[in-house]
Structure formats: C-alpha cells, structure tokens
Image 1 (tube, rainbow, N blue to C red):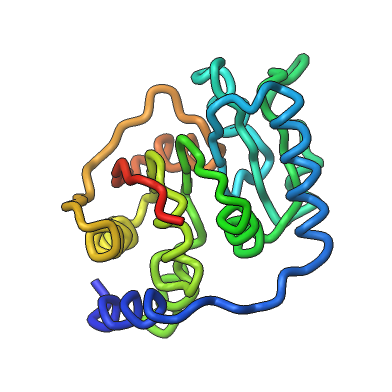
Image 2: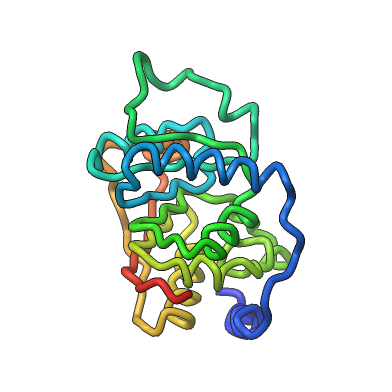
Length: 211
C-alpha cells in the first residue's frame, strides 16, 4: 500500500472540501431525486461509476424493494444499450453527473443511502496517482459520512487493501480485503476479468451516516 495513504486520508478528514458544485450536476441530482421520490423514496442504492448501466440493472433486480441510482460522468457510456434486452426495471434510474458533486449534494441534503457500490473504479496505479483513487481523494470522508453498506470491488488487490485501510481509519471498524467470485458477474469489467482469469477482490463495511 502507498506509504502516504494514512496521512492523506487524515488531511482530507480535517478539512471541508469546498470546490464549487457545477449546475449540471445539481440538475442531474434533482432529476434523480425526483425519480426516487416518485417511486416512494424506497431505501436507496448508489451504483457509482455505473458505466453502461449493467450493474444498475443487476442491482435493481437483486434488490426489488430498493431504488437504484446509477451515476456516471460519461454521456457516451450511459447511452449504450448493448448489454441487455427489453424494458429496464422501474426501480432504477441512470444519470450523468460528476460523482464528487453528487456525493456532496447527497450529504448536504442529509440523504443516507442504504448501500453504496464502487465497482471497478479507475485504479490510477502510478505511485503519484494516490490522490486520484477514491480512498485518496478529498471526497472520501463524504463517502464514509453517507454511510450504509459500502462495497468496493477491483481486480487490483492493492486498491482494495488501500480502500479497506482508509475505511478502517475513518469508519472506526476493522475492514479487510477478501477474494471474491461473483456469480453472476454484474459489470462488463467484472465479466471480462473473470473470463481472463484475473483474481477479484472486494471489501465491505456497514457504517452509520454521520451528518
């Protein structure tokens, strides 16, 4: 693991992240919030970095009594419908937004998701990229503060080790990386990694919201 991770996490936790929120992210947030409320404000699942939305579909099917919001910053990825056929479940919506702003807007509205999934995020593997990994980013204390069942998956063991260490540091509970065999795969990356024989890893924790 990166030797500066603990110091970076502590520094971010000690300072409020004050980057201005962009209007298009605020509009996307309000749109998804209206859809969630129209569905009865069911327990909320965040599928962050959902890509083409296959994981959003699987999560909506796996948790029919929840409402799933898939968030991705790429309009191109969100516009693709190459991984499924037929109508999408009614308990889900996909929106284009920057996750950094979306997490902060949830926190400002004191909306605590029941579950947060961070599935195969960009690992930013170079040593100088620590601050670009979610657990090294200034937004990480907000992710933890939102609470819920937080789960991160990756094919890079170090990423999950670091994510677990950062969760342990801020969440106050011990979190460990564990090998994971998903059946079935719920994202295109997950399916690709399984087919090529990659080892897959995840860490999970249940945390209370702290607003």
